[in-house]
Length: 186
Ligand SMILES: *[C@@H]1O[C@H](CO)[C@@H](O)[C@H](O)[C@H]1NC(C)=O
Image 1 (cartoon, rainbow, N blue to C red):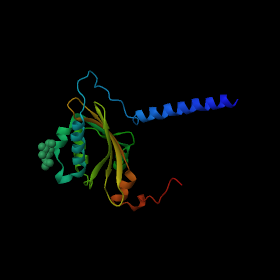
Image 2 (image 1 turned 30 degrees about the vertical axis):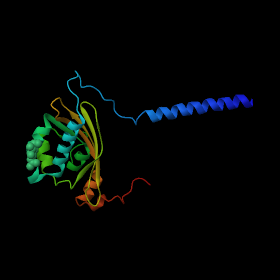
Image 3 (image 1 turned 90 degrees about the horizontal axis):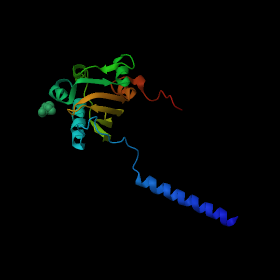
Image 4 (image 1 turned 90 degrees about the vertical axis):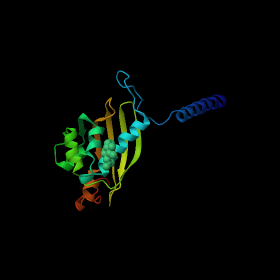
């Protein structure tokens, strides 16, 4: 009895050790790197830096400083941008395309007040998609968001899926009723 329970204890210990070493060997879950259909190309880390830096440029430099040449280089001819956060801010229906074309993005994003400073919190990619988590250092509240970029074989952004903290955004642009004191969670 004693020996059987100590041997099953030992088996469980070995199992736990095996599981622990597996979890050490396996990095945190990431989307698998996949080849572009047809194996045409794969984004490099440096391509991804260029794309994300260009996108940050279009958030930080707007109105008279908006770089239309950059937008036309970075965004595909068949560009579209989906965001219920932006639809809410624009008072357009949820689920609608937020910017249906590259020109819509240039007209809409280009006219916004500049984001004070946008920095990367998390960035990783596959051959044709980029996941980017970011923080805009607005005041009094920072704004965090997550973008998914789908990239074409010209290494241009074809589709953006983005959600961001539209409550903090409204508070920052002068809507005090959007203060977080209106708590939902207790
Ligand atoms: C605008 O973007 C283009 C293309 O990336 C670049 O060559 C140019 O230097 C940029 N202009 C400014 C003022 O940053």
